[in-house]
Length: 181
Image (cartoon, rainbow, N blue to C red; front, side):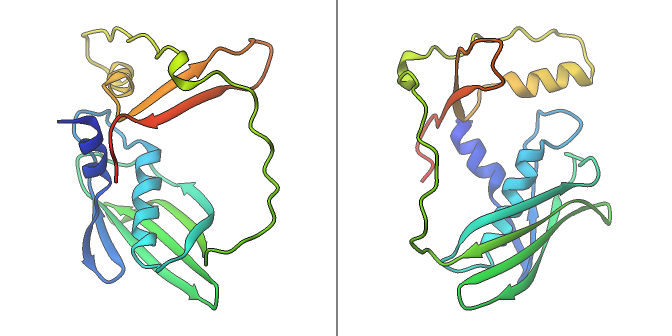
């Protein structure tokens, strides 16, 4: 399957009830669920209960290791809908226990103060070579499973800009390998 289509499919949630959603983990990964997947699915569940507001704050808590062999239930608590802000709490549940939860705040689109730092100098994305493929050993084991998951063809083209080793910074260009919509 096309990596971008696989990404979109892996983030698609099934609505079970008004505030209850079911998400799935794509096959072929390690024996645990990748945290970014759970964050994205929980955020999508919250967004399904908010209208025309943008998430501006998100706090995540990983509580237990997730089991990729079973679906994840996402229970949304509509904490508050005010004049210009909405607040949601989402619990990700497996085996009757929370594996992850978060609190998010959504705001009406609005002009505000601009206090972002200027983008640092960087080469153009296409001038940076993609990372070389990593050979994954054939033997079994959790480390090999994680390597296999990390090195499979990704929906996201990630290019690392080389930085001096004495700096605690990195520059990374990222973009989807295809149209997401």
